[in-house]
Image (cartoon, rainbow, N blue to C red; front, side, top):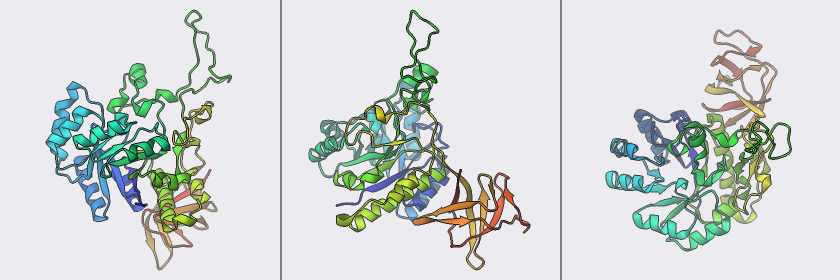
Length: 407
């Protein structure tokens, strides 16, 4: 069995570095246009080159997302954009549209092309056609079962790679090809500006009874009828590996660095545990618990085992589950004194119990028994944004380690 690539989201240069440090084999990033995530911080040209340098020095890959569905007015700018980035060193470019595919292949023939999930690939004939056109990889639609993936793998050449989503938010529209946002808000999700109206509260109105709002599900607050649970496949690494896919993709370019670190770290450890001893592998439930310590909706396995039923939706609220807060990031650690310099991210107090996560290691728990400020004075609370604090720790940590606290 070949170990699949762990592919992580990187909505900024900081998140790119975090993803790689916590175990990603590759990251996908977007420029300031054409990347389907207008809400992400995204990358300037200088940040792109710095991110690619950082990744390549560590033997990792960087993929460019350019997967909008372009209109005629986008094409000249898109072609100019390809000309600007073609020599940056991207390991692949992700596109969804046939015209964009042709522009990329013609103007940047040195960049391998991956076909986005937005292209709705759900059968092997479609995958074969993209392969004939020159695609190296096809990202399968989220609506695929393991049985369907197996059929596609069995009917396509070995040199065609497949990528699947394994974790993150699920779109109510087929492979994310949504018209609802554009219709209701004028923000085109297929050009990167989704307003997420699927998460809004809805009631039913009959046309001859204007103003009479009827709940679609019996609930005095209305219902969130399009509000999907989040995808989580960490309990099913063996099935994913045996399916023959080449890349396991985590969603979340607009999520925080803490989210990226936690999710990437959990999947990295579990993939490596499986490959260390496949025959005796037993899932470590602690890793699922880790994924519950980031902001998330209730989890589902999506379409992998069967078509989702009513249990795959969240009807009561569009809110996230947030049981933990990121409270600080380690900037420096002095091995001789055991004292860490920490930048505050959320308020915390002397006496609080924190969990500390860092790359490629399990977290450890630390009671904050003493804190000092920049002047060496003891403090009882860290309540200023970006405040620098010095805390003695019971174990050594690396720069970039993160402190979190249960709410």
